[in-house]
Amino acid sequence: RQTGCQEADAAQILALVRQQDPAAIAAYTETVRALAYGLVSITNIMNPDVLVFAGRLTEGGNLFTETLWQVFRQRLMPEQIRHMRLEISRQTVDPMLLGAGIGAFTNMLEMPTKYFATNTNQLSGGTKNG
Image (cartoon, rainbow, N blue to C red; front, side, top):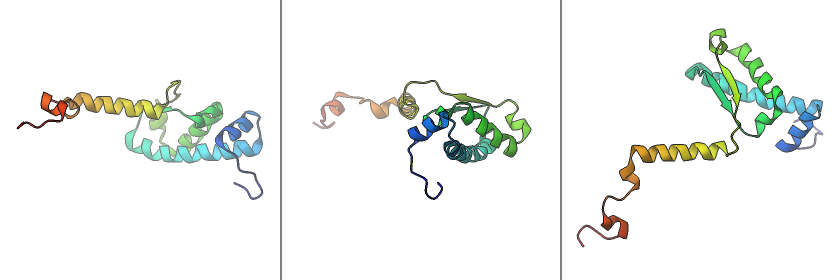
């Protein structure tokens, strides 16, 4: 944020980016670059084939992916990015909520006795002795 600049929320910045406002583009690009630098560390550790993005930040379209690729080309080994793909999720469901639901469901399938009572006393709140 530069001195004298008005504060703006994400929706306002994205609207200005779509209108090709130079200050908004600079702010947006700086934010995406910060994300990209964090992803460089994760990519060095996990070496993923695909990175999937979702959320408001991706609404910058090509500027989003171009900025990511620019940082990745500068900071990652060519072997790491040769087959790597960047994807923008097209899910209409909140991805964090979907991920939490999948995690909970997977956990339930792995340990069903943790979630389901094994006798009627547990269901009624009674005790085994009476």
